[in-house]
Amino acid sequence: MRGRNDGGQSKRPIVLFWAMVVCLCFLFLYFSGSNGHTRSAAIEYGTKFSRSLGWGSDADGDDGLEESIFGTGDANDVKPRSFPVCDDQYSELIPCLDRNMALQTRLKLDLNLMEHYERHCPLPERRFNCLIPPPHGYKVPIKWPKSRDVVWKANIPHTHLAKEKKDQNWMTVAGEKIKFPGGGTHFHHGADKYISSIANMLNFKDNNINNEGMLRTVLDVGCGVASFGGYLLSSNVIAMSLAPNDVHENQIQFALERGIPAYLGVLGTKRLPYPSRSFELAHCSRCRIDWLQRDGILMLELDRLLRPGGYFAYSSPEAYAQDEEDLRIWREMSSLAERMCWKIAEKKNQTVIWVKPLNNDCYRSRPHGTNPPLCKSGDDPDSVWGVTMEACITTYPEQMHRDEGSGLAPWPARLTTPPPRLADLYVTADTFEKDTEMWQQRVDNYWKLFRPKVKQDSIRNIMDMKANFGSFAAALKEKDVWVMNVVPHDGPSTLKIIYDRGLIGSTHDWCEAFSTYPRTYDLLHAWTVFSDLDKRGCSAEDLLLEMDRILRPTGFIIVRDKAPVIVFIKKYLNALHWEAVTVVDGEPSPESENEMILVIRKKLWLPEGGST
Image (cartoon, rainbow, N blue to C red; front, side):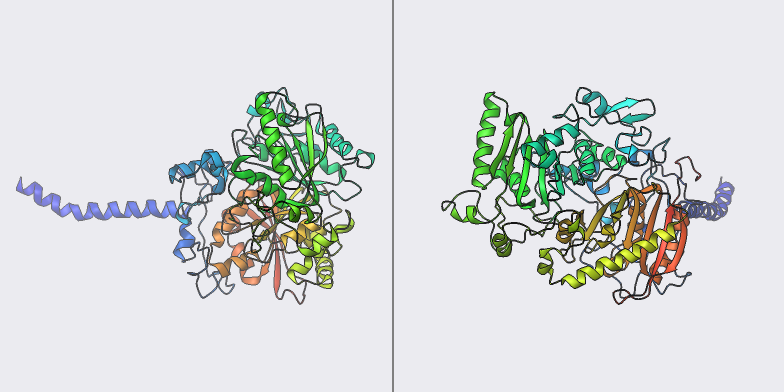
């Protein structure tokens, strides 16, 4: 026995040595990967590579490095590993609207106030560090304008709405495709006829909802699959179609797959990410919202967003049904609207349309103590990112009160006409016009760089990740595209200028994920977005993964930034299954020195491995 024990002890160090070698090999394979197609049996959290460099994700930027995370532009500074592929169950992941994550972290959310549908972003250590795979059988989306009426079922393999809403003409399944007849819960016979009826109620010329260019921006709350917004486009009216990821999940995913402007959001406890006085019309058709809750706070949020003389079109049983409960709700809504100084412009059939006053006279003439109260003078109605709603009325600035309106030109002249609210930002008309001219030249150059990669109908959904005054989007007016203009939450409040130009957009923080489904944009434009991120100490790797998440396969990215940023991003192309189309120097200008332009295309790769 003694001899056996002695022999075992002599062999033990050798066994331990080889066991450690095997473990190290496994760890090396796990963290290094081989070609980016490594599947993760369980989801991998955190961005290990970014944390190893100390990047973190500090929203205040207090722990950032003194030196740039992009280094000096030396191609040997960083050697990134490849990324694993997320499990198939995460093919529709929306990180900041992930209810499973909210449950796992045991957030205390009030379901009655819809807090569970609001943004709740994961902590840095719980962020997904993998590539979101397309669903099996994914195809390049059908091109606009055909996509308004039909999409590939494989791209959004959910047909429950077709069954649930089969008597309402939302959508139908036809073999490999899903078709959209243009109906809705309250307009079975088509959105086009319904839109015309609203214009008729308002006595607009030729029953055209655009009112000779004076009605341009619309907020469609509880939009379903966004057929209302889709059919508005032919009248030169653009809608921000809004819905949460609720029991009717995938509504916004269908909308964006169709090529219709849309955003995931909810009227809950926080202000919507749009500045005050952005929309000429708010619309709610059977949107199942309790407008009377919390002293009418949700109607007051619509009031904040409506321009002087703006309309709220409400189609719901409360507007016409005669049972006791609907009559009670109608009486209370009517009373609330009257105290808000709204007047009924028209009430017909199943729809009522209220109109907001043009100036402050009605607000000032209300009896003392009338509820809802006026907002305090220190309240900034354009401060929206994470700001809690308040049950108060937003009055007009004195100049707008005196002008009795927004002072905006009709569409399309308003796109290039300096709006009055430029003065709020101390921006001159000359600066605005020069910005418009500069971006027209830049966009013309972008399209030259794209040829022959981009066909006429290749691009529909575009996001400008740092939109400033919206001049990038304005330069695309003649293209059959729409642009989600994103304005950083911590910068100047230029989003109101964008809405005043007749465009749409959202406030956002690029240290977090955007409120949209994967694979929803054809083109991302990132002008100095990475340089701004560097200053805040957030992870550039996280942003690359987020851009990949929201970009459609075969879609494009234009990065316009400093040379070290371009070099840094190029190191990740293979890991992300992106390919460089071209790299050129940016046009010299006083506003931006030494910028470079990197045009990227995302490959269509499949979960099983391989790219096409």
